[in-house]
Length: 468
Image 1 (cartoon, rainbow, N blue to C red):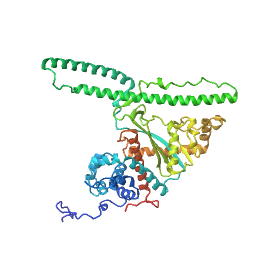
Image 2: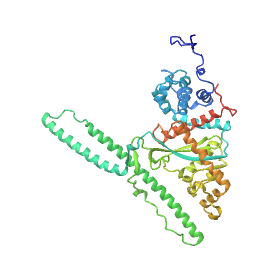
Image 3: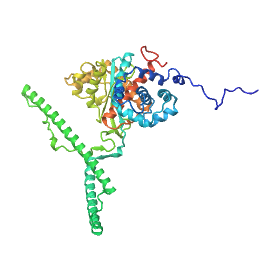
Image 4: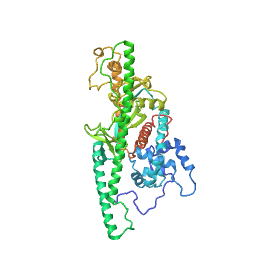
């Protein structure tokens, strides 16, 4: 008896459904994302096209391009070439574009032109998360992670090497110029003047361009060294003023050596201070995930609400450590969600007495240990004793059962978010160069993280867009 098979005829023309969304199952992320984008205010993008001359080739619809880019970041395909290819090969991308195929240049240009507006959608998605009840402000944890820049660390040069290379290139250029002058003199003597021979040799142009880049990088490092010296001088002046006030109040000379302020005009970069020629605003940073390793990148900060691991604030910096990021992140949380959380936690890398006593953190129960806590050990409150210092008060707070229990949750709140971004979605490198562009791109990464949280919670919570 012959077997029964499903029909198989490659010559048969298909009657396609009129609604392309039917190509995807109900509840698919792409269908959900179309509903989310329909809720967003895209007027900042649309105004750019409203102001343009209506003549000429029609552009792609902003809503389609936004949905396409956000979905690409959600599934870990942010490259414009990969997105273009996916519009042919991936059903979800074809549905999002309505079977259109914007080329990679159009995608890259749209992202570049509207980068600020795209980053601004972070707040709109955060509002949707709040409306859906995914942000409770009970406990917010702050942490940072290094993201690779779109630049190789091997394209960096230290200040010391720059000085050596500058002298070497100057000597090589001078030798080439002298050789060119000698050849010109010989040719003039042989052929007479009047022939054009003023074009620079390729070798000379290459050396001059390298010398110019090195000089610009040196000047930038010297400017930063001067700024650091000025900031240090201001800090020392503040300490000296506080020291003088203390001596006036107590009538006793303050203990310890008097702090010395550096002279900004004499400040010089450290010989090992580096600048990258591909992305000069990126920095060499220790890679926390691989001890002893370094990356060329940026330090990305996130503040995560404990309820559903929604990111409520982001910040991208050039700082290799987190100490100066606690106050800016606390201010960003308040600006974004309207108030501080009941509890705010961060690891010891964020601790300083000035940080924990800052007014921006006065309204929250702050938990930031002054030193790294060993796993499985607890601080004895009686051994700590009483003290007026912020560090001692924090140790006492963290030694209590309640403090230990709250701080123990920090890792489980914030660290999995970086895992979801880097491991699950593969977004370990920022595509865009420069601090401003890298900051905007990380905001897009954060808002798509929140979109995924909305997507996974849509069945359990009311008030969310549903993939129809």
